[in-house]
Length: 431
Image (cartoon, rainbow, N blue to C red):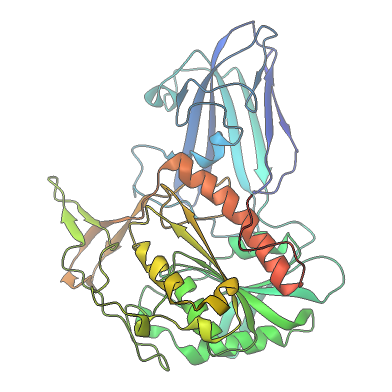
């Protein structure tokens, strides 16, 4: 009987897995499917393989001939997952909302080379099934819900005796509290604070004083190193991280993932150089009347040095990750930001550009999101809408997946280097 072997057996989400299928006939054709649920949505991937002369298939050594990925891709089953067809609502982004439970992935083996339609049919009987649980949070990482005065978030404390290097984690305009990235960083020895700073999608509700309070409170924690903290932000979170580093001396390191290097969308005191966005050309109505939004070219043409966040006036260390196929923010913004740095301060800024990579650069081995749907019932991008809108993020699946793997290693190295003052990361680091 065929068997599916997976190592390690109790992995973290960012662990590279070794998947071996044995007990097949020599050169037998099979299809391997991976599936998982998140919320009410099911995501899956598949790949077609031919066993070797010993009746074995190793995902690390054998090539997928067709499916959601092709070639030798050991973790392809995980990053190439897409939402199953026919689901409502469609167009969902994979996002783990609770780290208290693992990502449960079912690996199913079928006879023959199947198609996308076939793998979702009940008429094909599995040859073997294996379920694995991938942890976002190690069992020995402590999770603490924070409601301190008006602050809301989640603290993750690694095992062992502190103090630990601290990282504040902020997502973008998705709103609410998102914990999975902070939990994953805590697995690496950081004390992390996943901060909720927007209850909805309204950027007007963001207050600088609230963010400053979060930094002050976080830095006062007894388990945190007193030499300063880092901030990890994507999109609006990256924008805010840059802004905060200019007024909060506790911030020593910033990782900005495709966040605008300027105050965008709405004025935020004391930053008085809000860049007004021109959304007149970013909305596309398709022949089927569906609406797609690409905000890539929405910045005004007169974006100047004076409107950029002037982090070069500080000594904060910055790792700026840029998806060159970002359909939300044009990568030329990063180029302009880099060009503003005087030669004497350029050692404080590392810009890493990823070709064919979109906006949402997540931790590795998670499904790639090149677009997702949202329902708007109010004014959006200057127009009244009460319908589904597809937000285009960009990115070619395989290139984006490679960027997620590379960037995660860089982020961990960067924070270790700056916050622990270890010389493990430099401007020209090649991974």
